[in-house]
Amino acid sequence: MTLVKTASILFLCAMATLVGSPALAITTPVIDGRFDPAEGYTRGLPVILEVEGGKDSGNVLADDGMLWLFSDPVTSDLFVNFTQPLTLIDNTCGNNAIGWGKHVAPSGKDHKFRNLKGSDRAQFTITDGAENVVFDFTIDYISDSDSAPSGFASLGVAGKDGYVHSGSTNSLLAWGTSLDCNFNTLGYVLTEDSPATDEDYTENPDFPG
Image (tube, rainbow, N blue to C red; front, side, top):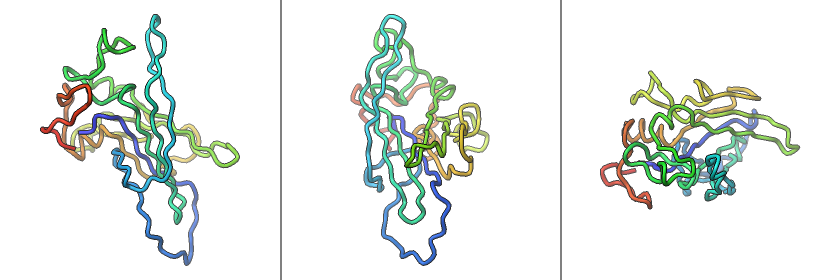
């Protein structure tokens, strides 16, 4: 089960038909909410993040997140994976939450599944070479879904937490988040307690993957 929070997306950067282009032997990333460095991402960029603390503690620096990119040389489609550090946020919740709680987390808050479902989202702003915004959207992390086998799914740019601020909804070709993957690909529908683990986030053998 994926304890780190990731979101992978694929969106259309250019509408172009490449007539007579030779087939290229390339590996394109799989859009499923899990990051695999062997999938074909070609550029990784650190993202500096902070934990939002309380009035007394203030914000606290977290480890860097990572933004991974791949541009398909044939279609010009752009693949993006954003991985947040476990020191900032994770998928652990309930009685098995790691690093949360009044005396542990800078925010002083516990971590419940409803916190992941109720408000978590990520905004991506895509610009061209002249720094003009071509696509600006917010992707939903996970929400109630009647169409998903688990009853929960990432709704992309729809639902309460998904938006398209600028650009076309049709530009988002595919997306996935780690909790959606846990629930609908791996089949671990855990809405109370995440799998028990330790401070190193060692994989629980009862929940492989």
